[in-house]
Each structure stands twice: as C-alpha cells, then as structure tokens.
Length: 599
Image (cartoon, rainbow, N blue to C red):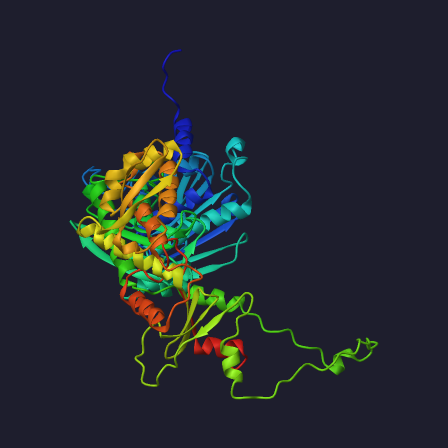
C-alpha cells in the first residue's frame, strides 16, 4: 500500500483521541488554559455529564483577534519560550487541545482583553471555523463545548453514564482547585449539585482549601509536611495512619502545580506508611512537590497525567524523608475519627413506653414474678464488686489517682478490663488503651532503633530450642540465617526436618521461641525469595514485635500500666499499632456528658 498524507480533519481526530478521552479531559484542558491566563475566578457549567454542554468562563487576560484565530490551529501556543521543552512553567503547552476538541464537537470561544472595546467570538464546528465576530462581554474568556463526540458514535457509546462522567469532571476540578488555592472555583450544571470553593489566601490557605475539598476533619487528622533537600521542596498534609481509607481515591499528588499520578510518588508514599498501615488500608494525603522544571519531563503523556524525573531516586528519598518526619512529629497522636467511631458504638437503653402511649391498647397480663432482690448497703459491698470475676469480663481497679497527679497526655491508669484494655483518666478525658497493640508498637520501634545502631542484642538460650518443621521451611530459615542474626536470632539446621535456636533477641524476653520460628517460616514461604529479605526487614521486625509484646489476657499491675502509658507518650507513632489500628481511644469529658444527655 502506498504512503499518503492524512487529511487535516483526520489528523485532528487522531489527536483528539490522545487528548480528549472523555468530557473530564476537555474540562481539564480548558481550565488549565484559564489558569495559565491568570484567571482568579473560573466557573464551570456542565450538562449530561459534559456530553451535551461544557462551559468554562474565566476572568483571565483574554485574547485579541489574532490570538483567537491561532488558538484553534494545531501546535499553536503562547506557553513556550524560545521553543524549549526543558523549562515548562505552564500547565498546557502542546497547542493542540482546542483544535482537537473542535474536531469532535461544536466549539465556540468568546474572549476580550482588558483594553479592547468589545469581545470577539469564534466558532469551530467539527473542524470548520467561523469568525471571529464582535461579541459583547466582560474581560476574560468563555469557552463552550456542545455535542461532544456527536459525529463519532463509536467514541460516544464508550462513555459512561451521565452521573459517572459528571463525577469524573468533579474530580478533575477538585485536583485543580487544590493546586491553585488562590483561585475561586464554581461548578454548576443540570447534572450535579452546585459546588463553590472560594479562593484561599494567607498562611492557612492550604489547610483551608483541603478542608473545603477533602473534608473539614482532614486537616484536624493530618500532619503538615514541610521539607526541602537538594532543590526539591515537599509540602502538603499527611493523614494520620488511623485516618486511613479502603482505597487510594483520597491521595492527591502535585508537581509544580500539576496534578499527576506518578509511580515514584505513589511508591514513596506507600513506603512511608508501610510501618503503620495494613496492606488493605491506604493513607489520605495531599502531596505538593516543587522542583526545577529542567529536572522533570512533563511531555511523556498526551494528557500530561504522568511525568518523568531526571533523578527519581532523589525525589523518592526526599518524599519519604518528608512524610516520615511529619508522621514522627505526630508522636502518639491518633485521629479524632477513632473517638467519633467509638461514640457512635455506644447505645443508650431504649426508653420504656409510658402509660399515655399505651392508651387504647389492651394491657397484656404478664405472669407474676417476685420483686428483684434489693441488697441492703454494707461497707463490704464495694469490695465485693471490686473482686467480681464474671464469665466474660474482669475489671481490675488500681489505686486512686491523687489530686496533684501530673497532667499526663494519656492520663493515669485506673483499671484493666477484659484483661487487655487499660482504662486511664487524664485531666479532661477517659482513655482506653489496647495493651497488646500499644506494646507491639513500642517493641517494634525499639527493634528499629537497635537495628539502625548495629546488630540487635541477643540472649543465649540455656538449652538450644529445637523446632520440628517441614524440610522446605528449614531450608528457607537456613538461607535466611545471616539476615536473622542481625536481628539477634541465631539458628542452625538440626537434621533434615528441624532447626535449633541458640539465641533470641534480648528485647523479646521470655518469648515462645517455637511459635516465633514457625511464624517467620510462614513469612519466608510467602515472600519465596531470600533476596527480598532486606526489603522485608520491617515485616520481619513486625512479626518479632508481635511475639515480644504484652499478650492479650495478661493481668498488669498498676505500675506496669502506667509505665506503658508513659512509654507510649515518649514513642513516635505509638498512636497506632503496626497494622494501622489505633492503640488508644480518647473520649473527652464533654463526649461522655453528651452520651448521658447532660449536654
């Protein structure tokens, strides 16, 4: 077949296939143009999920007649200086968005500059241009896109429902609004409820805009990120591990003001939270990265949704360090949503219907019963209650808290219930602590600290502990022995189907060695490769920490409980266990009063 030159209308449709995937893509391109034009207010109106109408109105600098004509030509742009692609400082720069959109829709553009007497309007209907002609309007630009993909039924039928497409548009505007908090965004239309995000200025602008979009409780349950290294600046808000979600829909990444989905940033966030969240939970985060434009290539994706860093390792390391420092600054703090969930779980008894509510209904005769036993008060009654040992619950009270006790953040232990939960009282709150989860985090952090300073100290077993295992598990443990020795665990083969453990980490104390070894063997079988053990070091430490922590069902003395609370207050990340679950719940006095109807 002979080579031939494609006609312009077909070229534009092919380009539209790269740039205009769905109505949300159109909105993204047009709003980015408005932002590059210096707009301070952008109004977006849609209908039928953007299929029948998309209208973008801004108060930017506008265009004169020559610029208006060139704007719909392919590869015509005002956003590149000196034809260089290594210093991109604008959101849009390809110069083919409007031409591509006009080839698959009915497009009209009206624009007016500050010094013009009136505006001008140009239309582009499936590649055919008309105008520009005079048009009365204020300064700025108004772009209308109607009947998107009407002439291309094959593309139209692959679009989703109106509601789904409208939601996609909302998501695009949401990300643009996060990155440009000094711009007022309005989103309306017959296919949605109106959204109004006023511009935010000043030092608290980031918090205010993220509260507008993600939710008012997000800044309250997040740590501020502020870190720079080697010309890379990282900012934003990192949600506390206990403020997690079941998917990644609440993760937002921005590079030089551009919303992206970059694998380097995704991996860095996943690594930063690896110690705090279970694999099926995901953090809420808004991450803003500023870097020299020459160090990043934004031209690797038609829709500019992906990019490439010149030194991805430096970016990854900086982001991990920034998030780690932010989470470390949180100390033992847990999210307020934990307490809210706990309050929602409390139930007051159902009120008994009064006589007036029973009028008109026949009274049911209940069989006569003897009155309930009412014991008379005696000084020993409190002691009897204190030592009550029920079938499913046990409460061990501790000494009274003196009036001049220090105002510790986690309070002073008052009791232990169900042999796993510590009840503590601070100055204005009731605190419930999961003793196993809390101590598990403390042991884990100690393991990590010891590992950073060298091999973990070990303690020799009086007699080596021999554990019988399947031969394949013994082989995996034998291969992993050099790595395990760094963690204070020394073992060797003891015949074809057993291993002998001679030393265990001193931090674990008197632990169940057999159970620990079997748990590690299961982990090695899951990872299936000794080469990845270095990467899985944190996972190995987590398994060991679980075995070295205070077990559920163990009674603690008052001094042991208070020592655990003080250590939690001094240990970073102790507000959640290594699986991302909260280690304590704090209920303010006002919360308790609300539960009992006192407020």
